[in-house]
Amino acid sequence: MIIFAIAIGCLVGIMLGINAPAVSYIYSDYLAIAIIAALDSVFGGITATLKEKFDFKVFVSGFFGNAILSMLLILLGKKLNVDIYLAAVVVFVGRMFNNLTMIRRFYLEKWDNLMKLKEQVKQEKSNQTKTEK
Amino acid sequence: MNKSKIVVAITIGLMSFMMIYIMMVQINIVNEYDGEEIEIMREAELKTTLAAYKEKYEEANNELIDTKAKIEEYKKDEKTEEDAIKLLEEEVEEANMLLGKTDVKGQGIIITLDNGEEEGIELTSISTEDLVELINELKLAGAEAISINEKRIIATSDIAEVGYSAIRLINNERTTAPYIIKAIGDIKYLQSALNIKGGYVDSALAYGHKIKIETQENMTIEKYKKDITMDYVKK
Image 1 (cartoon, rainbow over the protein chains, first blue to last red):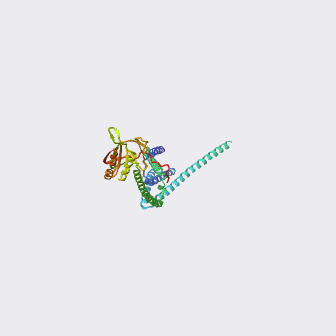
Image 2 (tube, helix red, strand yellow):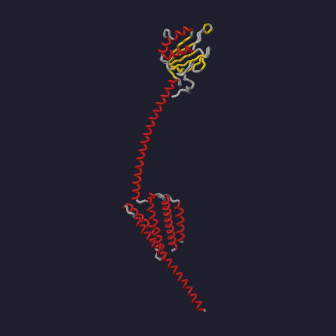
Image 3 (cartoon, rainbow over the protein chains, first blue to last red):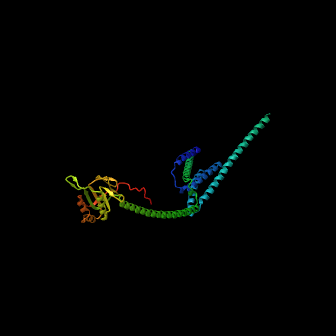
């Protein structure tokens, strides 16, 4: 059901987004960082789900909170003439990679476990046949 | 439990929608500005390019000023050339007028000269010498343009007789009496030159010719209608 909701959301987003009105280039920095922050939250959420530590409130607050906070930080950076968005990108993308690593490892372990289980089953089966003989 | 799950699903759906939507907007923006170098540049780079462009602009501006000055000069030259052309044209016109190649206007006299008649019998016909004499007299009195029967008398004009007939050739064109001689010049001089005692009018009357002199303030003498050609004269 959740996957269904995500698929519908993505489809509607693409359909509406293709004909989206052109926004001034000035805001592209903010939008980019908001997207990165949201993606970071998404991957964080996936990792948390895999670890069975997923909290919906944390996820939603992180999704919106990170996006808005990063945008505000960039605004501050523009006022202070510091490229804060670089730092934000580094942090968010770094965390994204961490989460991706965790997800990859989780599935690799799962795969390994599955393979071991299969081998065990095979061995058990062969043992059984041996004893039967 | 089920209700909260629905809420979660809807929220996540909305969130994914928002994220994708913003992504598409951003992609649109980037696509729109794609290839525009200036958008990728840092401020410092922009400053240097701006300075470069300013320099270029100044150079171009200087060039423009130079070119404008040159154009101005050329225009001046053109003007003097135009003046020269005008002057030349005026000269040509004047020369044409002197030659008799243009119609001319002015004050002058009209002399009507005819053979004397007595009861239908011609007494004496006007000879070419009479005409030549008359023209000489007129020229002496300062006539600037003369024509006989609308045949302009110019430098190369001829007045000749055809045998002993009444036909006279003027400018190689046939004509007969009566002769209407027009002359532009000072009316007083012309009239007095002809009317002087023992002058042309007297002698013409003595020969039995009919002569009549009229004055006109503004008359026209037609131009010499043939080409003036010179085949043997060389510089």
